[in-house]
Amino acid sequence: MLREEDVIFRSNGSVRKRTKAPPPESGKKYRPMGDIMRTAKPVCPVNEDYYSYIRCEQCRSGEREDELVLCDRCDMGYHLYCLRPIAVRVPVGPWFCPSCTGGRTVRRFPQLQKMIVDFFRIQQLTNAPEDEELRAFHSVRKRRRRSMPLVRHKKMRRILPFTPSKDPKQRLEQMCSLATALTALQMEFCNDLTYMPGMAPRSANKAIYEKGGMQLLAKKDKETLEICRTMYRRGECPPLVVVFDACEGFTVQADKDIKDMTFITEYTGDVDYLEKREDDDCDSMMTLLLATKTSQSLVVCPDKRGNIACFISGINNYTLEGRKKQNLKCVRYNVDGECRVLLVACRDITRGERLYYDYNGYEQEYPTEHFF
Image (cartoon, rainbow, N blue to C red; front, side, top):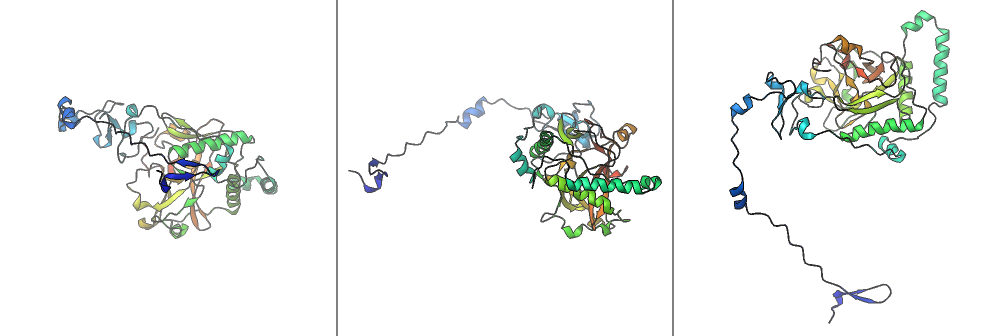
């Protein structure tokens, strides 16, 4: 006899009997620990003498033990400066050598316009690389150049806005490459400085705290900066593409010719106090404020949020060949009372050329003797 709770009434009036749930499947059987211990092979104990014979697998040298890291899987040793890309300091947590990790594969971000618009929070995607506002800006600059003497014009070098690629598919490819790199590093795109709880507040970013003062961004250059930010919000990005190199990691190269003094990007990310980040393992930190009081100095930390700036490589400023590769300059400006870091082309850049800048412009401030 059916109980009322075992009956289900269908919409057409018919009755169906509720069936019992099938019995749970039996779990996987494991071998007893006693059997495993009896068949396990003995392992030779590791003592101090074992590590005294560790050598770098790249240069075959055992010197500079403080910069020698061991793989947590095969116990092979590598110097920090022999790794590619170079490690700035000993990694925190488990670390595996290139042989154990194999060739690093980067999962490509889907080249779908809707996903790109959502990822970069584009407000209005446009196919026109230059609108009336930008054309008016260029025409005003041309009139100013004609009206001023040649000598004065050379002294007043102004920052130029970048010119996006005309082909919308090419721009989509450029933004897709950046989204791929950010996704691979589990980063969120952010084209502005961010002030997170527990870090430095926005009130700490004051240009008046800079030791010796900070140069003021000219009014015309500020207009250029705002135009570039507006273009980015519309989906018109700089003509740059992020590529993955097995030796250098993620790098940035020009996707078209770029003129000298062209604005490339602003260095963005979380703002924090320098004293909190002295032992941080992030290798993309950028100086934002060098205050008279060390406790007030600030850095930009693009480890969770950032833009294409964190993938642009720093050069080896200890060698002449390294300086020859430099095609960007990193400049800190006072913009409306706040410190900002801008990357600007310091010479003409040809398509396919990789971008390099002198880290902070301080030749002896940052140890780059192991950069390549």
